[in-house]
Image: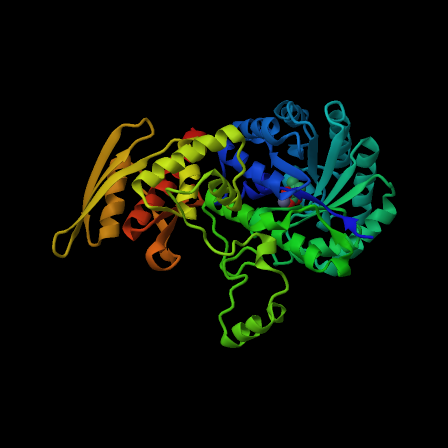
Length: 506
Ligand code: KIV
Ligand code: ZN
């Protein structure tokens, strides 16, 4: 009999708190809908005590997708954190609180300055206090992997007795190995009995073992896996949901376990997250990278033509890769546009879709074909999702013989026209300087790349650039038929992220 593994998705909490992945409430809501559609069992929406933005996004998600899926929020062992979670989740139908405290000797001494007894006491009283507000409680022993086994069993037994039903064993620093974690789960389950308890694994990827360790934890008896889309998360990230779900699907006979993930939603959800955060996955990333199903070598192509399974262990369409990129235009109807938007990860209610469809129609007035990138820009570029920011109105480049000159006109967050001009050695440098003059934002570029998407008459240039802002890397993306315009859009994308950060931090 196949075991049902619960997927606890922490893209919007552990993932979102990592460098380059931050999202505002409107963006988190778009992503939460996609996660619900993907079929995850639990969505961790954030850490309400940490910021107003996390409280706001949790509340919005609870009102919007809170009926269909369990929502969790993170809390330290502090009454104020617990009441912040309760308030933010007032409208959730299936709320869960996720209470955590560090348990390892290193964390007890250097992070908390608490003894074993004090940590135990705080954990138990927090779970008991949380019981006043929540029926569904998860307790995490942060840095569990480096915690003494006897203390780990003691704190799990005590928090379970106080009311926690899910016990999470995080490998906070990505240190464990598959054999080690399999055996740890077996020993913990034997030492802390309780048929009703759900044992959960939360593996970080510092040594590239997050997925392998999560699978080994399942073999040891874990029935919940904490994952993120594209494996985003602190430092090297968390267990990637697309990889874990597909291992369990493709090797179901071996693991005798499966998830509730709708695998054909994996690529659309991954792509949506890349667009929302600006953090692109590597081309050869398993399942969701653009090369994951590309066959270049002649000998492989020959094998594929004879029999697909010579080189493919899963079908691209089963994980949501489209057969071909559909081009929409003036004559495309609601059904075609709606289906295309779903393939890009978007989930709309009926009234909202009408609004998007009208914008699509407007776009077809000015351009003959509307590609996937145009559709993404139509929705994610709208101020409702991207937030207020500068928009490109027009740009002009001139060659001064040995020097380039750029003139730009932008609309500012209040809708006023602002202009900037600059001369420099090359057109892109002049353009960036002109935009810096228009916005008053000066960016120190860490990287700048342009590559082509698609081929032939529909080919587009995608520019991506990153900057360091308060020690955090922020990435911007722009797409256009004209690579200079794509560069301008990428520059504005990142400048707007910097401005939103400044406003949030003010
Ligand atoms: O990595 C970790 O230990 C965490 C906990 C808060 C669960 O993210
Ligand atoms: Zn974590």
